[in-house]
Image (cartoon, rainbow, N blue to C red; front, side):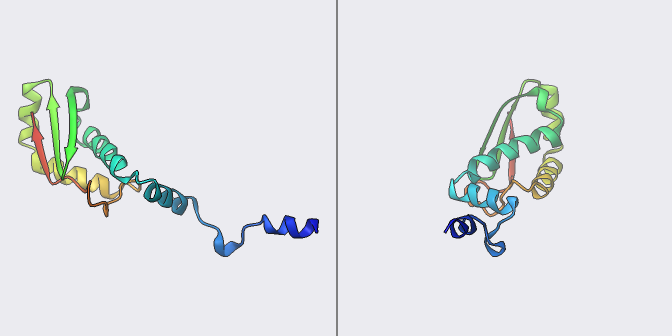
Length: 115
């Protein structure tokens, strides 16, 4: 009888999942994709723009990333690089495994507004 209990605790190979699958299922079941996507977009801004130290506020809604910077000189330089920054951020996000592009509420960056 002890052998039967011991055997029931083993996970069969066909039921075993990889850690990637478990994390993906957890994110979907806990409905964390939207918030996680927003945080990944903010990280993409810091990585791709180089203006992280000058950024005061970040806000993302419906494909539009709103950025407030503390320097008019930096804002002016970023303004002329808007299209390139959007492409660079979306490329960075496409390579990020935690970013879920199929999330309808928080997708990739389509527009950048500098303040």
